[in-house]
Length: 175
Ligand SMILES: C[S@@+](CC[C@H](N)C(=O)[O-])C[C@H]1O[C@@H](n2cnc3c(N)ncnc32)[C@H](O)[C@@H]1O
Image 1 (cartoon, rainbow, N blue to C red):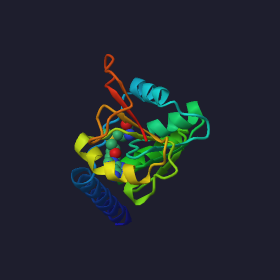
Image 2 (cartoon, rainbow, N blue to C red):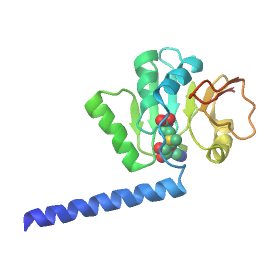
Image 3 (cartoon, rainbow, N blue to C red):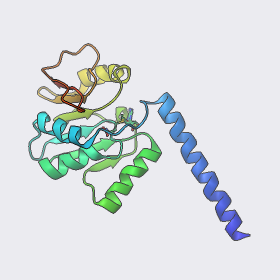
Image 4 (cartoon, helix red, strand yellow):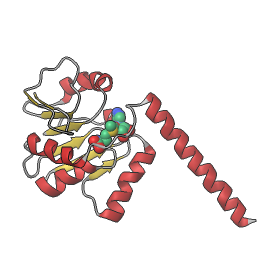
């Protein structure tokens, strides 16, 4: 009796969880597609992150960018992830793999980017275009935005790193 009730509640909880994730993916900023690890390391290298700088991933996925930004570059790294199931994966990485950085389960647009030194993103161009206004308004002078694979709205990149093998192009913007 108790076992059946427990299983029923578990199935219900998982269903609610996955339904929320589905809607976040469809109506939010798109699905979780992890950046390949060699590309993660290249993006972080070309971003020129210095120790102690504030680095944000505005759609953190499993938290790979913020982990390596903190571990390899000593960044003060924060990732926002709005999809609860993807956020859960990121937390599992931190609990069981010891991944670093801070993960916040939220739409990043609820937070200000005014202290950011480097913003990292890997999102579809139509999604990025919607964020351009917020970047324009909040980012301080000198802040960098490094976008893996896709350009940001009407911005002109300061530097464009071309595709290299399986690693897509990288757009570097600076305010
Ligand atoms: C293509 S994945 C990239 C994940 C990770 N940055 C990587 O490169 O491996 C984009 C992620 O951004 C999340 N996302 C999209 N819009 C967002 C928003 N406004 N705030 C927080 N997360 C967002 C999605 O849920 C998805 O997991």
